[in-house]
Structure formats: structure tokens, C-alpha cells
Amino acid sequence: ILVLRGVPVDRWSPAQQQLFMRLLGLQFGRLGYQTPQGDVIGEVRDTGADKRDPFARLYATAGEFRFHCDASDLVGLLCVRPAAEGGQSKVASSVTVYNELLRRRPDLAARMFEPMALDLRNEQQPDAPPVAYIAPCAYAGGVLKTLYLSDYIRTAARHGALPPEDLELLDIYDAIADEPGIGLSFFLEPGDVQILYNHTMLHARTAFRDAPGRERLLLRFLVSVGVSN
Image (cartoon, rainbow, N blue to C red; front, side):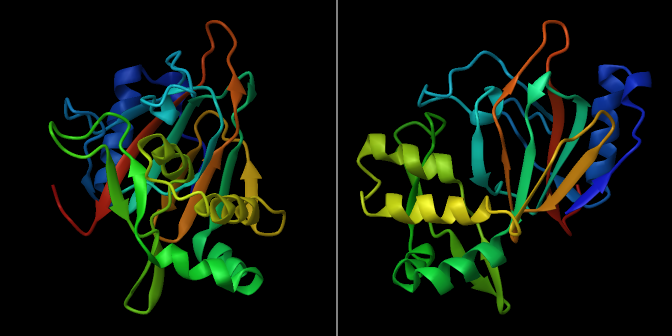
């Protein structure tokens, strides 16, 4: 994890803020698309979507977003405006969380290396299944790598793709990541940039409340490292 501070977002137009994030992301590799329209800089804000809506993307709501990794090597978040209340960032090492899971519940740990269903939230290709199966944990070059999305695994239950016994595993894994001494919590201030390596870091966000005219806004890039545009 890296946090940069002092980006002068208050002096820049929205277009300049987006340009900064585009240029910063390009220093690391290839920018990934975040919308079907091909946008490479995403807006993380409350669009009024209901977290209970099974088709809602959680970054577009004001609700809690449990621990997860994005499907890219790096994720960067620039804070343009914080929330009036809440919206705290949380991070944790997925390697540490797995080691704690293995120590406490070795009977559940092996399940992390088996495919689990992810709810695609109505964004699958036409005639494609509504879920994708991905093993949350795998070893690459002797290093434990993780792709974990707690909320999207949980809502796969609406497709009958979440075995009831997996709920205990998800609850324990999330609880470990949130424990003092394992997870780290902090608030991003205007001009802060948080950059995470998704394969070994989990991140989450608490629910938040906006003030009229001062809505929370973060700009996001997703990057594949070592691949030029």
C-alpha cells in the first residue's frame, strides 16, 4: 500500500483531476476499462443506487463495501471530496488473513483454493451464466495471491450458487481482516491518493453520508503492471 498526499485537487477542474489520475496510472502499466463505454478513470460516488439491489455496483452506493480485491494488479483512488460522515478506508494483508484463517480454522482454509461463484450483477455477456467461478486463493511463484470479493460471493446465493456452509468461511475471513492489529483503518482527505497491490492486499469501505452540494467523490484507476498502452 502507498498513500500519496498533497495533490492539489482544489485548484484543478474535474477534467484536470481525471487527467492526473490517467497519467499517474500510466506510470505503472496499462489502464483497465471500468465501464462498457471504455472509461479508464472511474468515479466512486453515491449515485443513489440501493445496496440491496442485486444489480447495483457497490462503489456506486453509500453502503458498506466489505473486504475485496479488484481484478487488476493495482488500484488507485484519489480523494477529491470526503463524505460528511463515514466512508472510512480499511486495508489488510490477504496473506496475513489467510495465515490466521489457517491457524484458527484449518478445516475451512482449503476451501479458499477451490472455485467459488461471483455474482456478475447483470453485467455478463448475452446468453452467458450470471456467475463466474474463481478460486479466491492460488500460489504463483511461491507467493500466495488472492482475488476475493466478499459481497459478490455472498449475492451469488440468489442464483443458488452459494453453498450454505460457505457463509461461515466468509464471515470468519471478513472478521479476521477487520480485527485490530491485522487491518488498518484511516480516512482519505482531499488530495490523498491510495494505491494498492490487489494480489496481496484487501480493501474495504464503511458506509457514509453525504452533505448536499459536497458529495463524496473518489477517482479510480485499475492498472495491469508491466504492460504498456
